[in-house]
Image (cartoon, rainbow, N blue to C red; front, side, top):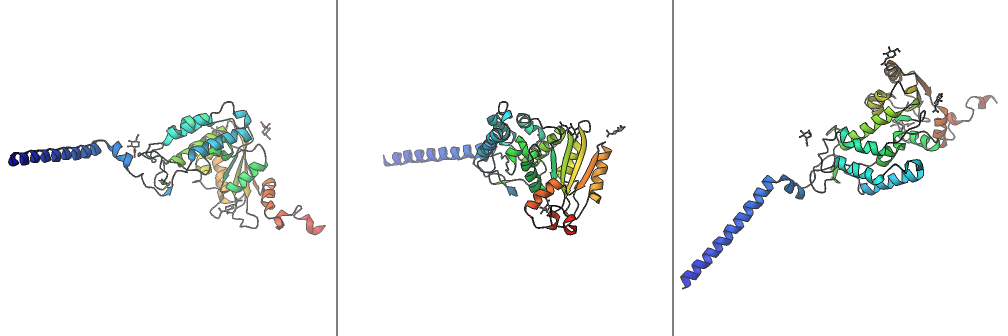
Length: 305
Ligand SMILES: *[C@@H]1O[C@H](CO)[C@@H](O)[C@H](O)[C@H]1NC(C)=O
Ligand SMILES: *[C@@H]1O[C@H](CO)[C@@H](O)[C@H](O)[C@H]1NC(C)=O
Ligand SMILES: *[C@@H]1O[C@H](CO)[C@@H](O)[C@H](O)[C@H]1NC(C)=O
Ligand SMILES: *[C@@H]1O[C@H](CO)[C@@H](O)[C@H](O)[C@H]1NC(C)=O
């Protein structure tokens, strides 16, 4: 009797052990053959740039509604902010962030696009702050960041990740890690469209205090916008070359990099002009440097009168 009970207990223990072994095997097999499952518990991929902006959805939606309400009420009827957010989301979530394509953003670009009046496009390079102070004070001029698309995504970052929740809030790839990252591809695509849409007289604000030259072929302006302006639509390109008040005058309109830009544009049959320190813009710089001699109302006549 005791022997058979012991044998019974032995069989039971063996059974339990077998069951446990089968369970372990099943888990191992599942994790081998279902990488998606494994990823869902895993850590997001690690990159060197900052991660997706927290509350991205709320920021994008808020900016979208605010743009429609404050800047462009006429757009309100045809623009659906929720759809815009959804199309951004589908452009990147759960995707490897190094595999972004312009096509991913096509629906977003279509949904957020709106007409840009002729003579009002302002391109800029290395004059971010001044260019936007100018468009804020001169109604009607638009940089890319003053269009709905640029306004919604200026200064925020985003990227996807194969693991749950499909968005990487920890880190996103730098351009040096991969060229086709969500941010770079987005801004390239948006800049290309912004340049294609320009018509009439087009303005470009460049920085004459940059030692390496005001025009850089590697910039978004130099590598994308210049080559997507349409000579059939653009009648003239006006360069405003701005120097920092009291700062170095590294380059004037006759400088090397400006001459290079002129050659590129003239080869593409554009008419081009360049003005050093375009006065309406310089006056904005003077607001912060009212006592500097460049900012006197009548710079040369003051002494003689
Ligand atoms: C990127 O996309 C290509 C083509 O769709 C694919 O062959 C490749 O495996 C993808 N790479 C990554 C890292 O997902
Ligand atoms: C754009 O500017 C040009 C030249 O100053 C002018 O002839 C044209 O009428 C302007 N177009 C619009 C739409 O204002
Ligand atoms: C020119 O570039 C320098 C260095 O990036 C910057 O400090 C300065 O504000 C820029 N000037 C203008 C007019 O934007
Ligand atoms: C520029 O204009 C000339 C003369 O009208 C024409 O022959 C040439 O093909 C044009 N170049 C470009 C790049 O459009």
